Length: 419
Image (cartoon, rainbow, N blue to C red; front, side):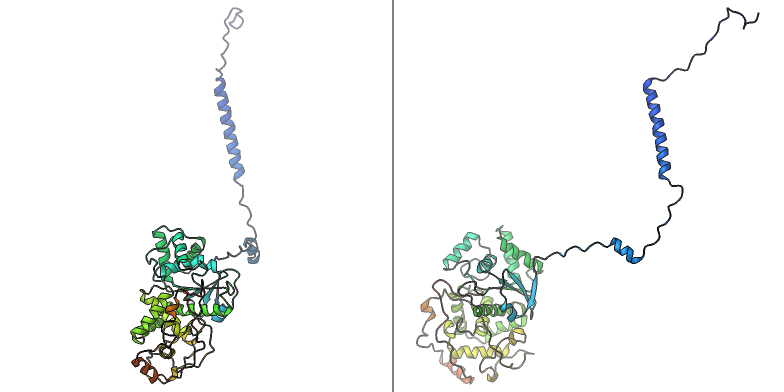
């Protein structure tokens, strides 16, 4: 009997391989699935052939696709109009208008729709730059400015009817305000942005900023008065931007005016509220009044305490030596200027110009001048020294009769002041 046939033999059953624990099985299944998914994704992302090239677009089609509609232009805060004196004088602003003066674009004209807006922007600058008895080295606070204005019998609207400043004056104003942490009002902050936009950021900047109010801003500012204020301030602007004209004015002050003339102008300007210790201010105001304020409504020889013949001589001499430029071209020839002997001439100055149509010419108000000073010895006719009288007669000038025998009009509480 074979072993296979033996019923008592032992049969060995092979043991099944051990089964992995349940967590291990799950991990293996997850790994297999991730591997398969990753491979499938890789194959899907790898095209079997490169995609066909798109046909090239024509230039016009490409431009049509990529061109975007233009953005609306950004409106600048300050928009300037370039214009001459007549066009500026004729303007009727509804809000602040900014002009570049055509004969000299370094001159900026602020044309205000109201005296209050002009005052808010510029009164503190005026107080710093030229007002007598006020500090030159710091900016007034709002309360100090209000006190100073009231002390002079003014209002913020009538403190000045026109303003004129060098670029350097404005730079210094804001530097001092920053130094002392003086808060600026909204209009002064706007002025600061304006001078920054103009590039007037250092005291070496060359430029002039002047201002005028709209005709009808109050009862004083007629159309004629507006033109007068504008021309007066433009004369100051020429002094600020034309080095030859400023040098000639300084030479005239020292060499052509005698001590008595200078004293008369200082008294006149001091009574109008100017700081007479600033020689440059005195010279600048002298040229504006003497040469660019013949309107008897605003300035007369009597107002400055001079005889009419003396003022006529000085005007003729000043005109004969004036450097060429837009201001000379706009200045009528004074009577007798063409026959004045021995008058100084600057090299390159043009010869006598034909008489021009008279234009409104400005002045500063003299409300603070007392009546006694205004009339000082002129009620009987002020006489100069014998030597001065002989000099006046020697030039053979025919002096026309004064247009008005009365001095510049004054008001109890307000008069026309321009800076």
